[in-house]
Length: 242
Image (cartoon, rainbow, N blue to C red):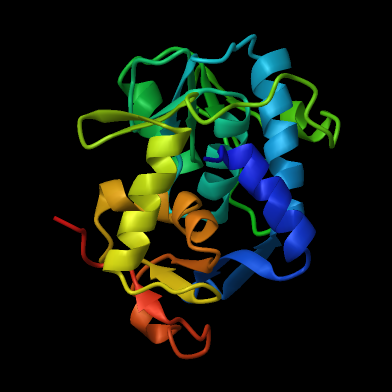
């Protein structure tokens, strides 16, 4: 059994330069690719920031409000590397991390401090004014070392609360493998995740499914049908196993 950090390291060694995650926003003309090496680097930096800057410990909770985007994958990787439990769209957590648009709604609801993630194609710092209590987490992440400095997670470390269950890393990989099989995703394939994907399944499809199935994932803002051919997708995340 593996944990996400170990799996990322293995993928970086075995398939270093190939894209693991591709993000496409056809309407905006944006396309971003992350290899396993790039994603492992992001996971180390985010994991270090969560442990060092936010004083989180293994088992701490991260409320993640990042939309379907490569940044969601990066923050999942970082939170799981730090041994944290990701609570999708939760308003009660040790740390709240959101996209810019989500931060406005969270701040208007009177939530406390909100770390805001830039959705710029290259992850550049945010521009413009943020709502009260919100701050740009870009600098806190960028100044961290490229190597993860704390104890790594293990298969029984908590990972994700989804569908009324709390999954540890071992259960996360098992659920991810089941989803990949249900979607017809084979090793070396490319999984399309878009607006048709069940919202709970999308959290696993962003990272755990391609790792478990030795595949890659294409995250699409909007309708994925417009880019399916050009991205050479082989499976679509549209159905869950019973």
